[in-house]
Image (cartoon, rainbow, N blue to C red; front, side, top):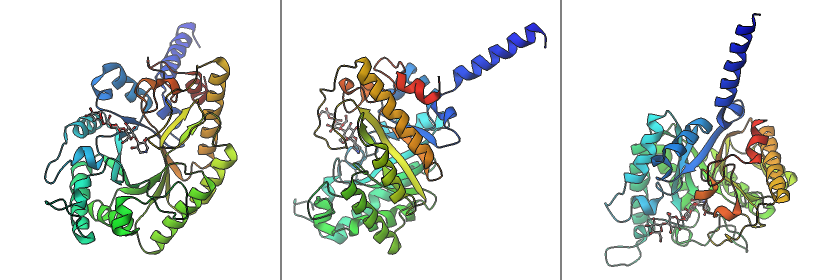
Length: 345
Ligand code: G3I
């Protein structure tokens, strides 16, 4: 081969290698996703990073019932549309998040005009209208929905969270939400989504609920493992045990909100420490090793896991705060050692 041709080939390979992002490296395993806020899709550098690294997008907050549907007949589509249109323009699929959640919910659905609690049937009429209006608006770009989020408790005798939803409906709201969602979009993959999903007690409760619902014909297609982890936990054994429990039960598993904070807290609870820790070499090494362990285990279950989504694009916009250093890109969009370990550089 002539020297010139060899150089040209090397340049082309280097260029191709340079263009390789997370979505290319893991394309045989699963989609690589990221949750976005409206500022991410207004920023040119962040848009470039999204396009290079990811092939699935979730709205961090814009599609939640409270922000989207703040009062009867009032819809705030702007932020959700901005993100959805970015995805449409760039050929990126979306995960919808979320249709029913005790937090950031459209709480007006529980009350009549005089502020008195409504009965279950009235609530279901309102919930059905919400679910089907939202799903119909985005069914061209959304392939999967977190239909119900965080309905299981973090402790105590009751496996269910004692939310307003549960107090009014028992666990029937879960079945109804999935039924309304299936009617709205027969093609969407419908998920139950929760955090601390590797905890022994909670994983068994999630498993038992999904098993019971599916046995009763409730169309739960998948389990969303939020993946709000830290540099120490879950261990490989704990993650593997949860995946081994869920994998035979459902057709799809998504890791839906992955981040690895440098302190010892876990989960999606809204009370958490933003203190983090200084990113010393040893902490950075633990961060890299945990991400490597997690992805090796995700790949082991690649036949069931078909999407891994990071929660937020970079440390500067993480819900955990930048001092928790939870993501693969720092606040200046620079890849960390964990990124290079995952892409094999
Ligand atoms: O939009 C309002 C703004 O108008 C107001 O000025 C400001 C100050 O009060 O609040 C803004 O709303 C905030 C919203 O994020 C948008 O920034 C809420 O207060 C704040 O509570 C909300 O936090 C979100 C949290 O869910 C609670 O809904 C986080 O950004 C979001 O990352 C987090 O995501 C959840 C997942 O949806 C479910 N799993 C757990 C995960 C972490 O809690």
